[in-house]
Amino acid sequence: MVKRLLTALLVLVVVGAASAAGGYFYWQSRLEAPLALDEPMLYQVPSGAGFNQVVAQLEEQGVLEDAWAFRLLARVEPERVPRLRTGEYQLLPNMSGLEMMALLGSNKVVTYSLTIPEGWSFRQMRELLNAAPKLDHRTAELSNAEVMALLDREGTFPEGWFFPDTYRYHLGMSDVDILRQSLERMENILEEVWEERADDLTIDSPYEALIMASLIERETGAPEERREIAGVFKRRMEQGMRLQTDPTIIYGMGERYEGRITRADILEATPYNTYVIDGIPPTPIAMPGRASLEAAVDPLPGETLYFVSRGDGTHHFSRTLREHNNAVNRYIRNR
View 1: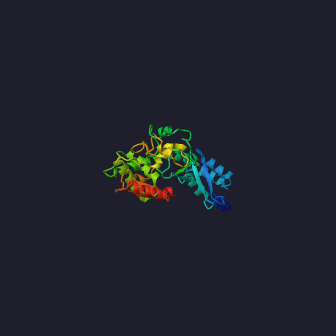
View 2 (view 1 turned 45 degrees about the vertical axis):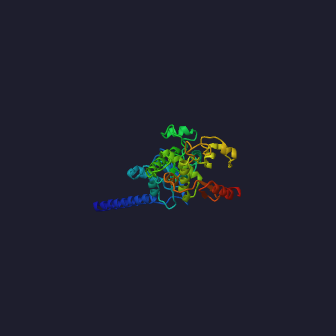
View 3 (view 1 turned 90 degrees about the vertical axis):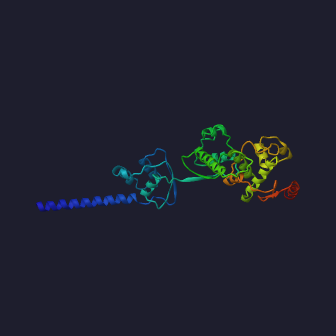
């Protein structure tokens, strides 16, 4: 009798253990089961959301078919539950539930890119930032002066101080973050370039180099011409000639410019019109790239004093006014 009882108890123990093991392995299989997705999906972890809240949301959206397995995980093995991070994540069909949860606790958030082209103005940069998706637009209603104060550069005129490049951002970042990155990068690059400057420049400070670089940037997109244009500007200043560069007329006109410069525009006295003022303008007129900054502090030696656009993105350079006028007739008036 006792023997039969012990046998029965042993059978129950074995059956219970087998059932428990089977239940455990089934639970684990549900945690490792693929997500119920047919194609990639963008999922956003809400700010301040807890693990169970996210599980419930994913269940409601049909992503998790065995949400109970994850609720159980949070109760019996909380050390395996990742600390979720706010942001957007790319969920894939072949991803398991555990892999998804690990992803939601990582820094592998979905990122977006925003490109500031060389030669753009600060106004254009702000318009691009204001239109960028997923970005917190903190500066949209601020003036330029208020933006610079927010960046701890109170009293600084913004034009030229932001480095043109491609910047990446993710949900939760603001336009202030990108502006600060761009500003600090321009400051660092300008400092590096100024340290490598030539000895016989007609500009006296990093800021004047920034102004000169902005003129070069607006005059040409041809890399091989930048130093030669810088050389023309340098020699004109040395000889007391005005720079006479059309982009300064355009910048001085502001929003009045409609794609054409008239003789009246050339003669208009604005603080930027280098047909009227001596030397360089009071501020940059655009955001120069590194190549233009380097050209501004290392002009190409030579004898040319003039240049005119060929209409294909390059310029014809001349040593004398007669040669220049002939080039103007050839490339401008005939066209």
